[in-house]
Image 1 (tube, chains in turn purple, blue, green):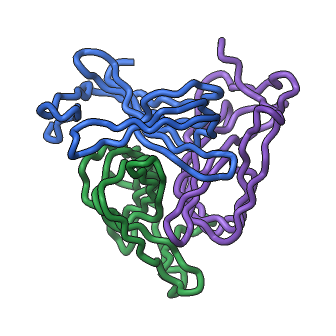
Image 2 (cartoon, helix red, strand yellow; image 1 turned 120 degrees about the vertical axis):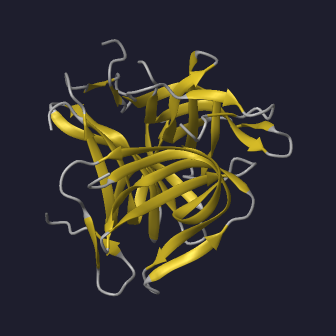
Image 3 (cartoon, helix red, strand yellow; image 1 turned 60 degrees about the horizontal axis):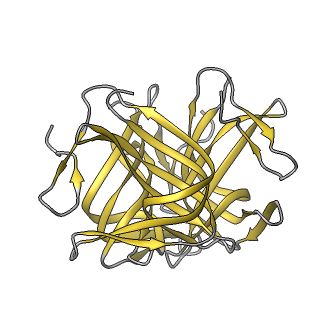
Length: 110
Length: 110
Length: 110
């Protein structure tokens, strides 16, 4: 893979930890979920951050009652993962530090 | 872009408004959410409606506790958006008024 | 379609039934939802199972209050469906019985 990719998938995760970005605290808060969850949607992308491949992924997760939780994927043990990565052609997108707020974003003007 | 596209994305939205289509009322009801939400999934498409590009988008949104809300995207201020649009080749899909019910759909038989 | 596909979509489903895979029971539990729900995300794939095309799909569903439910899609009546299927090129992925646990998965080592 060169420039990066677009990621989609489904599956099942055990004990996932998701994040919510707090604008006041300027960082992600961790939300720990315990148990096994259906991975209902895995969406995001792969681009460059400090010269290395970096995946930015968001998830929705379903529990045994069909309730749904989610956030920015921090971690989770994979029970089942069926993931599609579409390769992006062209100049690589590169994440830049947006000024000490723990957000690394692409520059909008390219 | 010619014929239209398929849209996927993640990010963060402030004060999003989502819709739920009520079959009895034959229109979308608005659901206003306040605060900043992780945009967990943005899915939909771009096609033609009355000769112009029209985006039909559905979203799931996560709050600071990891709870998830969502619906048909009506509006929302973009805090962060990382969106992929896949161009569709071929004859453009065109939305038609389905008879005064505020639903503009593609014809199934093409 | 030869090898399979990647599926994405949005729409609206009536009376959907979703599943949650129980590791203890080694099978899917059914969760019946009644009413019409916005189909916020339809994600999954098409591959081979016992020589036939098989769709594995997960959904998130929004109700009239913007609350979200979801799981492995078992069934649901389509009110509106706007679905994209990306064809996968190459050798078909084939699902194998993982040993009597009602999970049919692709082999990770290919």
